[in-house]
Length: 352
Image (tube, rainbow, N blue to C red):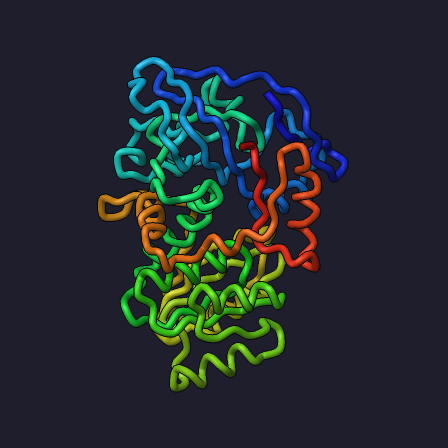
């Protein structure tokens, strides 16, 4: 099959790669669309050597074959693939029994089986994962929407563990893919006013299309002023930080714009040791909740809830997909994703 790899010099290259073997409990998925995630961009920047297997985790496709112990009746199902968690978890440990698959200790690099160590990602024509990590998508959903389930579920998870309540004023810091999926999810989950920081015009416009009430530049103080003015000086009930990075600006901003006794959910991935003066959040009695991927909450997986959101005809998350490239042109896709001057928001790679 054809697959794409980081070449170690700053570019993505496409070459032949062996078809994955289907182990017991697994299915073979014909990949239709894989989204380029911000983490793909950041990880490539940090890599010092070429990939030896394809990456990519925002995956959707169709089941075309099954391994031992899996009914052939699932062949032909259109699915969103939970690549990182339930798609490769052991389903037997304490965390898996709680539905917290992303924390499965038997799925970490130090304890993977030989086969799991070579589980490649979605920048390829085919991928294998356990059937338990494949969630059927709605008949009405496009492949492009199927590949949005992963980033949407990331935001859904953050809002759920942040215990969003109907009518909450929600601040969302950052308007990349995760920030925008957080806007869409917060709207569906009953948020009151939604305030968003956006660096680029196309991001601000899209945030408003998805349900944000107010947008502002994150760096000139206008966001804080606007939010306080619109909440009678209190601040946000719930703040979702989606920027991450090696600077603490957005983290400090999240602590400032959240009301006393409010909640901050950290979805952004931060790198390095970032100094924080904890006196301010302590005095404000803030709840600070980190969020990692997805899980089962109250009996429902974040993927399942995210897929259900697409049943609403007014749910227009598909509009964030601004650029599409074939697998053979994946380098062009990465270039567009890096360069926001292209107008890019979400870039997807098509294998269909």
